[in-house]
Amino acid sequence: MLTETLITAALLATTALAAPAPNPIQLMTRAPSPGVVITKCAQPGMLALAYDDGPYQYTSQLVDILNAAGAKATFFWTGTLYGCIYNQAAAVKKAFASGHQLASHTWTHPHMSSYSAAQITTEMTKVETAFANLIGKKPLYMRPPYLETGGQVLPVLKSMNYKVITDDIDTGDWNNQTPAQSEAKFTQAGAGGNGHIPLMHETYSTTVNTLTPWLINWAKQNNLKLVTVAECLGDKGGEYQSASFPVQPGPFSC
Image (cartoon, rainbow, N blue to C red):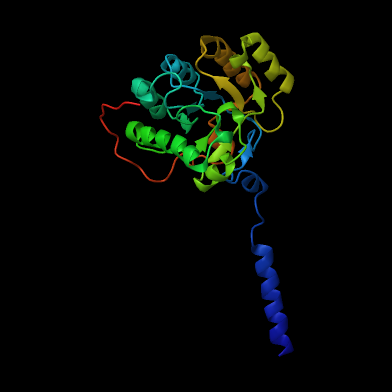
């Protein structure tokens, strides 16, 4: 009996030693939780360019700039802020086909902290419907307008399984700051540590034509990979709901 006990103990110890230890990189990059505010990447060596408020007249041009550099970016889009999203259908489909991440910035860009749960849900589902019509997918990432997350915002977004992104560098393009002023913020923040998720707006020509090329070059100089927000959070492949939807020919209206 004693011999059998000793043999069993030895086998258990051997099994425990043989079991692989958790990979710290894998632990670090597990998919982010929904309904929790995320401000920056979960790993170093990356930069997640993230643009708000489109799609707009510069979207297609921005996609060309990113594609030429082999860069991937994330677009947080509204339904109606700069015109109806369906009016930019070609640019939306171009960005998606190019491998960029398309995410939600709500339908009308409201101050949602004062909204009811039903109102917040409507803001999100309208964007989902437009995405499904245009690209056949519904997003699982969003950035709240004005970065406001009070009231019912986070509980509702958690219930809808949305990852909530804000930023760790505000370029200030929305506040009339020049590209040079925005660039200085990245230089000051540096390229070390976990990657940045900046707040930028594709609705400004200077952000598209001046700041973005500078950031592409800055990333290259600092050996940073330009990736989507989902990838920089270790969630590549988790950008959208698993279900696919038939792309609709339209016409649509907002």
